[in-house]
Length: 194
Image 1 (tube, rainbow, N blue to C red):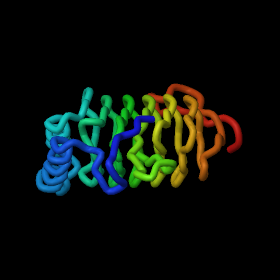
Image 2: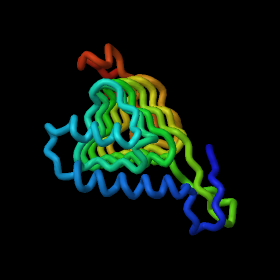
Image 3: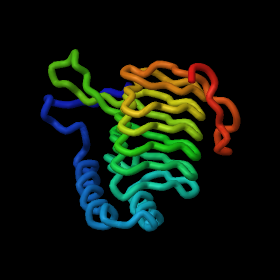
């Protein structure tokens, strides 16, 4: 967990340059990307790369996705950030090959040090493994690693790392079953409680 220096609870943890970058990013996304139809993905990827996102291959970013700081975002080939998904990337977020972050899911890399009077910002990275699926309105908290092929159920709150090929759900989420078979082929079977 990285803790930022802040003079008070109301002071920004960001440098002046970062604050200008954040402002420019918000306006550019709103003006050039948020209205574009889904097939204009390459145009949105162009703007993300321009603002420092690390994009490998051809990921997909929905026009209504929200990315706080694109220079903290890494997406691999065929990774997907869905409709109204929120990558609150105050710290780094990495989305692996073929992984999906579904509609309105929230990836939160930031919190505060509540033991300090100044409530300084604290960040920790989120890593989502290849072929993983983050369900509708799920919340992933700072410092979490989602294993390869894992599935997070809708509206779940992920407070601990999720092992590879594990299906979890709930608040806080708990293990429901294991996935078997190749994750990338679409022929994944469920094992355990049906």
